[in-house]
Length: 213
Image 1 (cartoon, rainbow, N blue to C red):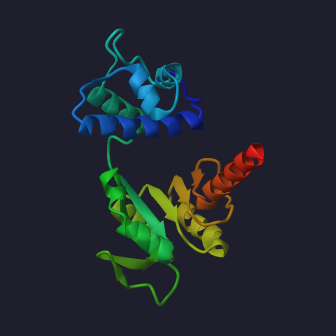
Image 2 (cartoon, rainbow, N blue to C red; image 1 turned 45 degrees about the vertical axis):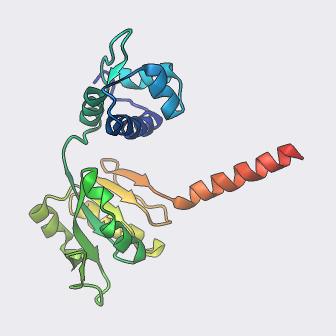
């Protein structure tokens, strides 16, 4: 890897590249040109070359990219060429939906522990998994080799869930709760807020309508 300071936008685009390359692979393509890949990803070919250059040299001049080789290289660069065990904290409607979402395990993110502080939920079996008290996280992190935490609690409980995860040694957290939380610098935190996309869609529709008037 040529740089440790890789923009978040680049990481996001790499995820798109994997998705598009996987589509090409399913269609039977073994090689794809940089122009065709760029068009499918809605970026220009120079942007793709710039993004990939953070991790090494890819592609063959006059040929393009070998689809499977590039998928393998990007996955290795992102660290998703292996499985990651995840802990889900907050087994409400959203938490249950994520537990039922088969794509997590297909992508290599396996939810192996479900946790909640509600005594009425503790002991319940959801998708073959027993809901465990959040206070048991330290023991379960070691037992199940959990590495990534997923927070799906109500907003007022998100910080407490984060505290449990950090205290248990988790170093990466995905927060679906509509709340800002604080974690130590060594813990990587990502927010997933569906409403950001609704806001963006609403703005662009309104902006376009205003421009047409």
